[in-house]
Length: 423
Image (cartoon, rainbow, N blue to C red; front, side, top):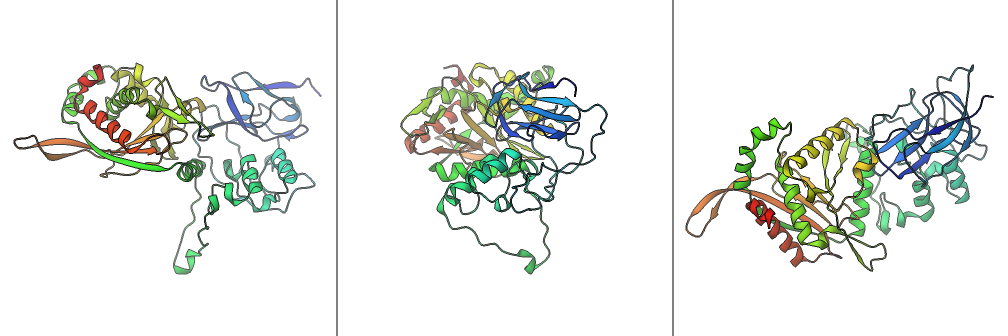
């Protein structure tokens, strides 16, 4: 054998302390070139580190839950010089594997940075549950039959979280019947007519799990309001040519970011998180705001950093950047970290109001629907004004109704007269 080669974390967009989500191989495993070795990532972005060549895994240097940065060693590999890489592989077989189950292949759809190299063949579990050796070992220790576990990882891979949920019972799971509720009946819809089964993307599944977890843990209340943005819209249009000259598109969301940051500075409870034990509120001295982006692969919420320190054209440039990278699948784990508050704007699609779900551990989320001209009484007569519907959902454990009404009122004042941003 040749001298083992250390395999390190490649460039990950400047992100640091990225979590090891899964270790896909074990010491002694034979791997092919480009086979995924570990998965780095967060709830909504993941990145696979591939093998640079075929060979034998000599030692693993990381475990699930460890944090790494660019250049960190994850394992050592003894490269195979003469043996051709096999055309197709299955997850490693262990003698004590549980009852086999077939897992259908799902195309890779999660948002991930450019260095990811996809496997060249469909990964099917064939004669095993689709899980890494470490996960199967954990399942044996916890007496969990993987044949009955639905994987939430990539391509249906069973993760440590899936095993933990199965071991803890339905009360701690995030799927149907979670939190002690009665599960929905399993209906065979094909008995009523033709149907088609479309597998949810990984982003769809993870988003659903996160929203469900927030819904069952956070007491939601939604405050509805309107903001007069007549003058704001006129100002935005008047600066369109200047923005284009700077290479940016000055959208309404840029103004909504700036106004929200000002309101968050004034109402610190909205820029906080509740501690896990519920005994204290963590007030944040920075203002990072997540923006919900609709992509072909599902909804993602990248975060714009230091919003309160940036001018409008800077915010517009940031929005163009994260929206473009989101739709191209090039966001990194760092793009999703550090959020304090979230904005979900559906104005470009339609609607009059909605009830967005809090992006926990944040305590509030702002929804914006389509603006429309309405007659507004000015004390003497009705005049046409462009009104923006606002929907603010909040965690009632941290924020009460009076504070929510004050927040939306102040936000409306800022949007109605941008000079309020200077106060």
